[in-house]
Length: 396
Image (cartoon, rainbow, N blue to C red; front, side, top):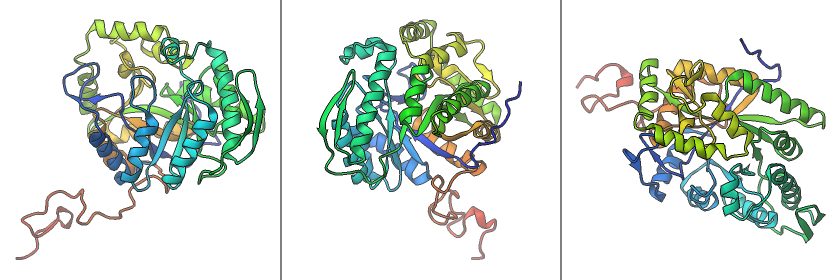
């Protein structure tokens, strides 16, 4: 069944990449080809994304990751225009503390901070972090947290008494660069999550479900926002496997999971089963832990989700196919793509070089270096006298 385009669809899009602070490598669920995620390696990815013209990078959060704020702070002086989508985790810190952190990082980066609001969906991990609330209570805390956080960033003196949080004469002395505050990104598939999104956030995120499901979710959130006199932007989180031919891309998809055995998949699926995240449950339903039906929609492959939590789908194909599928999401209302691929350094280059030229990018995404001269990527100079783009060797 075809999915109708949305009349309010954006005309252009921005693309963000991903910093793999929880690990990287050539294969999923395997030590073979695994990489040390060091400061130098993360800086290689951040600098590549900056040079290639990505809008920003997402830094994940959770006990399996290096701290997103510390990593972002280390990357800021190494980059020129790259934005950093950094996680705020209600329940793990006071809103006043992260408001100060956000204002400081926004100033030091000259306005390059984006905020990813992460309520969390794994009760076991959350209890380890000291959070003993059920699903809807966590979203209630998130709503109170963001009420205080947003008012602080707008230089208000905050007196607030909620069910979970309280502030008396709260004040932020040094404001952020961005007004009224760094943009808030938020993903939540449950009714409670969507309520928080429309009440507080700027960009609503979904994981990479088939277009029909994404269309339904966007329409649901858009109507909820409209009932409150608000509008939201929409973004999507996906992996990508793009090669010059479709055959190469699908071989690479198979190769990515070739070291996974059934025990690894069962271990992962058992862990995901304890999550009370509706979004994670929707990801699992796409493949059911089975290898045999992983292409769940044209060029949309669910193999990543066999062992990876969160975003579990990838766009797979040649550049034209991947760009076409992305344009289908744009037509539904998506105007931000947050992408990743294994290994993240090489895939960062590959996607930008193969797919960027095929997308309707905004002025804030894309390489602004102009036509390549002595900075590549034109290949090696022929016989030390001419670049391949000149198509002939100069007379000696």
